Length: 258
Ligand code: BTN
Image (tube, rainbow, N blue to C red; front, side):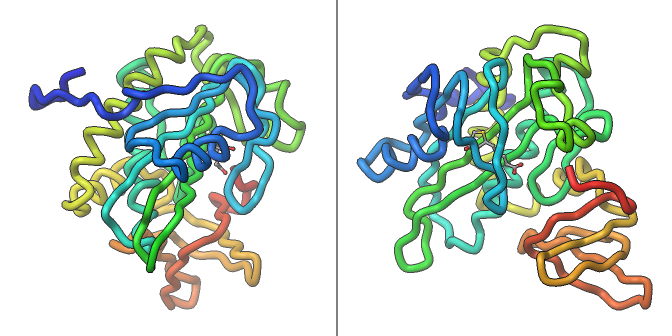
């Protein structure tokens, strides 16, 4: 593959392990990572029976979806792992645009929405040595070719699938190739994170919107005004005070949390 500058990008997806069914692609790849698998290794499965989302939530992963994990060995500190999630989210939006000509957006911190509903999520898990990342496993789940009725009822209200939104069968192999290419390209910009942040701000659908934040301890309302260089969502509350949100579920308006 060749990127926009004509440079060869061949590390991501050079080694691919394909499975019919796994517990979770993240778990399989973590094991390979601990055994020394090289950066760029991909684990992909047709179906996951113990797919995981953020905050330990279950991620329903029937046949027809694109469920994969990518191994990275970045030279960054653990607290910077959000950068990998940011790069991945941007890459997903770019790939959806390139392959399907659809406009997707990012909902902080890790959701990809199409027509206001979630089609994709990113789960970044890391292993560390002394606060530095030893490896990161980036799990990506794309609701591609299945009927949203396969999802639990409460999820159907907030999530959708690409085939339902486009009326087309999705070429998941093409989507994966494009996505890996985009990820490898953006990964090259990890050291100049401002570029990534600027792109994130352009694609984020939360900025400027009224949000309800629930971090498990407290719940409050405000307007999301920015994402800072630490990956935190900056929210202005009704009384004018500013809160930095580092890890939480957020809803747009007072709706549900995709
Ligand atoms: C989220 O939105 O909460 C993140 C969902 C991440 C799901 C993917 S599917 C592939 C990989 N394996 C998992 O068990 N989870 C991630």
